[in-house]
Amino acid sequence: MEPDRDDDALLAAAADDPEAFAQFYRLHVRGVIAYFRRRVGNAELAADLTAETFAAALAGRRRFAPERGPAAAWLYGIARRQLVTFQRRGHVERRARHRLGMARIELTDEMLERVEAVADAELAQVDVALAALPDDQRAAVQARIVEDHDYDEIAAAQAISEPAARQRVSRGLAALRARMRSQEQ
Amino acid sequence: MTDFIDVLEQQLVAAHPGHGRRPFALPWRTTIVFAGAVAAAVAVVVAVLALSSPAPQPAASSPPTQPPQTTPVTPQPRVSLAVLNGTTTPGLARAVADALTSKGYHEPDLVTNDTTNQSRVRTTVYYEAGHRMDAADVASCLAVRPDRVLPMGVSERALADRAEVAVFVGADRVP
Image (cartoon, rainbow over all chains, first blue to last red):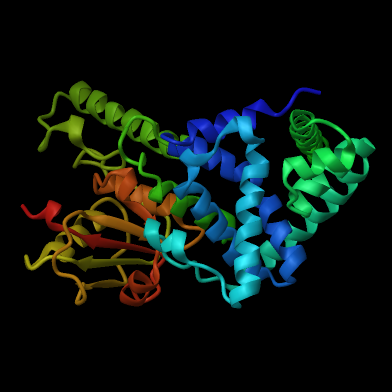
């Protein structure tokens, strides 16, 4: 399966095009919510971290370099840094949102329930789709996205070259997304 | 439906530096609204010409829901409205409220001054989650640009007394 070049192209186009960024956002927001929901166990914090992650992605969109890895891995790298900062300081950063003039979203009970539902559905889909990946791709995606290992570490662990590790992550993410889309249909 | 995902998307798009730079590269939902507005305006022009009656105003600039004067206005969906004057020019909020009621909206629940900011430059329509399209319709009626339709922030919500759609009138509406 080919890497998900559409995803990379969207993020590249998002440098100047708000609608491209919106599409990239819609493609990933549920996954990012689920990522945080699984790790902080709280829908409100997960939503707050998600908002800061995408604000940071918007602010830093021109720093995305496709040759260094797929767009999804870049985004989850930002998410991972937000999580580490939150765990270290005990509060969610607001720097990117402040820089962009984004107001804090006041979450009603209804909105929180929706965030919970999105996270639960996404996590169930991810687990099923991840389990269906070939072993090498699953290991590469988990190492990069879940454990935040660098590509050279993934390459060493899997006894492959670094470009091959990047390709394995990219193909794994594309396959994961394709499987999740097919689950939605 | 109230949805964090939609509200965040609106904020991100509004915060994108390219937002509003290219007025014709609009999100598809906004495009549909304005395509409908253009079609409705054309229909009004055709109707006026067919009746050969002089239009009181240039028909081509009429908002989509404004019918000829001889026909009743189209009722608009019930949405709680607030209009606040963000300038020092008296009467602007009242004028906007009247413009809305003349186009089928009910009398706004709140028509007052924005006591926190009397130097607003551009008229902006804010909306609570789930009322984005209502706000787009209001903006369309007032000829407010789509990039001035934004999610309600904390300060706007407090000033608008929990209205679902709030128009903060700026100096761009000073006659």
